[in-house]
Amino acid sequence: MLEFKDDAICLSGLTGTKVKSETIGRYYPFWWKITSGGPRRQYSLNTAIVELNAATGEIYIDDTGETVLGSAGHALDLKVNTPHTEKLKIVLIENNSDCYFHLKKVIKRRWPSVSIENAEGSIQENTSNIYLLNTNLDTALKKISEIELGNTIYFFDPLRSVKWESIEQVASNRMAKYYQTGTEFLIFVFTSDWFLGRDDFVALPDSSKKSTWIIEEQETVQEADNFFGDNNWRNDILSQPNAKLKQNGLIEQYKRRLYKWFRYVLPLPFSPKQNQLFHLIFCSNYEAGITMTKNMFIKLTNNPKYSPDSQQAYRLFKIRHSNVCRGLRGNRRPSEWKILWKIITNHEGGRCDLYCRDLRSIERFKSNRKRMIEWLKEESYLIKEEIENAWEKDIPNFRLNWNTVKTTIKVDPPLSLNPLLPGFTEKESKEIRDNYWERFY
Image (tube, rainbow, N blue to C red; front, side, top):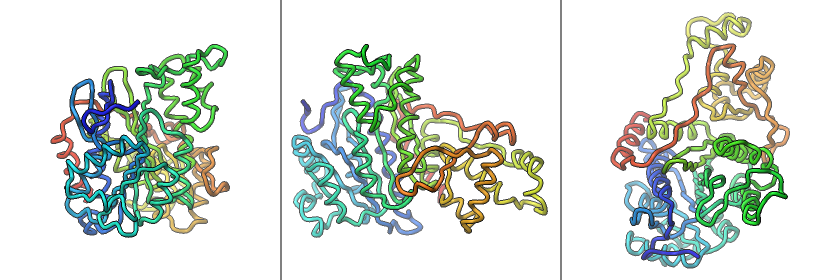
């Protein structure tokens, strides 16, 4: 049973929700400035934020007794109180009638300039670019297909876990072509709760043997099956000896499933309190988008930036592969090297395929690009991945073979990200975000 404090949804015991909401509040403006074209293009590109679990727009944190904006609230605040957001569309989907009732009250109180009647009305007659939908996902997707969304981020923010069938439903509705760009997913995962439990949610069992599970554990396993979309995860995760390895296994298994729709999957960790680990998982098919998101998170968390020594690495590459470097003088580099270095420094997870946008900019001819990728595979820099995408089954995906990269050109993989911790002020966040934006342009 959902509970409300005034109009805010009550989330007892979830101080992590505040950290998550603050993170979203920092991220939405950052994402919009980039995808709208920014000041260089006068914010002229169509963009949209689609909240698939909008709730009420406000969250009451029972632990601290405070009310904060939820992610839907941050999306509305960006739209209403930021200059140049005329082309930004906000789509708030909430199936629960109680949440939807309070959402409308929050909008009237916080953003009185927003017309509820307009936002709930006909898609064709909407003049505000704010859309409110009190319906299920299937009906909502049919409705918003009438909207010219442009570059769009979909945020999945369930109270406990998102069903894989919902991921598939939105992805198939949005992306008809091979790793089509212009769509990003942001998925919230209560990572540690699966193994430590929370309130009335019982942790996953410590064994993959079904006969040992109590009824409550069986229910949690079924929920995990819905989360992954199958039961193939069970032995690999449940057999791990401790919670940390299980958490890592859960994220890795989930990433592999998301690769069906996305080239790059970036789990951003945050730890609201000791022994608690959540993830915001960012999914994209565009290298620059995922790189900029990761760089911003690195600055927010003081993680070290990944900066391998390209000159030393190329010297070693040239010694080993003198045939492909022959005749090149000064700063000229063979395309095989350029592709390898781009994958190392700019491809999350070291993944690539024939149609990556930045690889096409290095070598525009498909046949040459294919030959170079095959050469990198033959030289053991790349490994073919046994992961099928949702469209072209005959287009192979590859990932870096870090063993070869480390031993041959002496480049180590990037370190795992340290989590975002509570206590980071909005003023500090804005300074980092604005400084990063200025450097980007």
